[in-house]
Length: 202
Image (tube, rainbow, N blue to C red; front, top):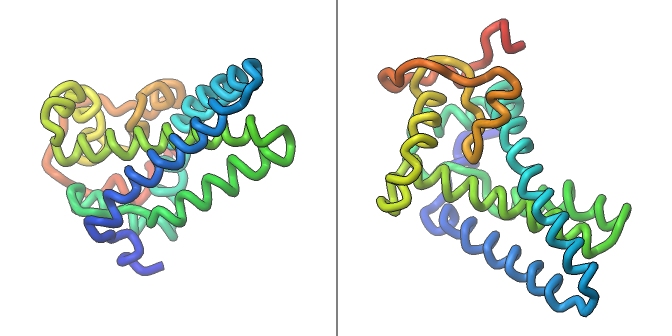
């Protein structure tokens, strides 16, 4: 896969935020229009579960796909080399993948209500991840960036410590649970952490 697949135009990069927000709002609106109170409560429960599930999915994707799967490590290295560039996966790919993985199976096994709640929760987690990741690297909006100093430092350790870890962006809980927390100072920018894990992580 060519490296250019990860380089997005400014419009395409920011479209991700708008499109996901609109889809989640639409799904929430459909759920709210349900006249049955228990169904609306169930949607909310599954939505929250989906948002929590995203944090684990994010960790696993970052650790095992972006840093180990050869088809993606080269592309992810672009981000490590130029963290402020508009690099990412096109919206139609991520949106389609989330629908295929989280919506369709849940709809088949349970109901449209549960499926829409799950995918809306996962999408909200993904949207929050995207916003957080952008703010960390670009430092804007500045007021929010100042509140994320701890998260930003933890992510800079992932980029610049030369160690393999700190894969969670939205939360550090999975790094703590799976022993991939990076401790120590941030050094000068290097990209060696992208190429693969040391033996103790294999």
